[in-house]
Image (cartoon, rainbow over all chains, first blue to last red):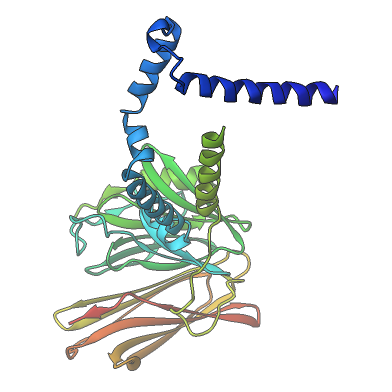
Amino acid sequence: MKNNILTDTLLYDALEIYNNEWVTSEEFNKEKFETSEKFNKKMQKMIKSRTNLYHKATLTGLRRAVCVIAAILTLMLSTLSVGAVRDAIKDFVFKAFSTHDSIKSNHSATKDYPKTIEKVYELGYVPEGYELLDYSADENNVSYMYFFEDKAILFMQSTKDAYSTNVDNEQSTKSIETYDNQEYMVYVWNSGDIKIIWDNGEYIFSLFGTFNKEEAIDLCKSLKIKEN
Amino acid sequence: MKKLFSLLLCLTVILTCVALPTNAAVNLDETVSPMYNYTSSVDSQLTITSKTATCKSIITGISGTTTKIEITQRLQKKNGDSWTNVQSWTKTVTTYVAVFTNTKSSLASGTYRTRTIAKVYKGTAYETIYKNSTTVTI
């Protein structure tokens, strides 16, 4: 078997050499031969494919430019793997430390946003029993603190420029959830505490309290402009 | 086959770069690494209007855990590369949520911030959390 394979290989090589020599020799008369339809179609296809953009890019000097662009894209994508840069794609820029997240507003892409509080917001309702214990408002921040027995609700509104918070990330679970086209950053603790942060395009809001997520989201959605 | 292999290799490299998040953030905001065992969040804010500063510190602990919060709030002014204290206030609450607001008027030109230092207690044990506001220049 082995000898047959070697013999076949040698035979093919010999035939190829003979064929090449014969085609280039004076004895070969090109006019006697015609190419088949199938061969012609293949040749046309090959000629046509060499004129398309892919072949121009790979076979000509454009190759270098394509490589450079690909390298730049790869570098850009790799920078997106850095936490602080990647998360700027959402409404916030946050840096994750070992014990907490440091969160600020990502308003670099937004040109039109209020630099001071122009519209004061409040929760549409508070759960039964809660009473307002502290309310304070200035140009950049409004806060409401409610208490019922030993449980608190804290609702805050901030301008984007002034917003800066640290949130425990060791004992909480964090998620980003969307309801009615509004994205919310949700932190939940085993104690039953929940903190939700969101950006409505104009201001940053946060809600902290001890209730389940559905109750908390309902409160967030109840937001309304405070009447004077 | 070669093209397919090259394409797969490129995709693998690109996906690897995206899929491996790095946590390169360095805590330059605070001086001591906080623990956040009894603290859920800290906010620090500064507003300056007509040379009057309003400093606001908001600390939320953990219900059923946090028993007391001692807040030291400092209005600080930038002095070269360091910060000097313009005014300090303190407050203690025996709840797990605290809001602390103070004002200081007749400020000189410069760059200011609110520095919040919160000692958050569980019984007699406590942790110290630091948080600086964004800076305001007048």
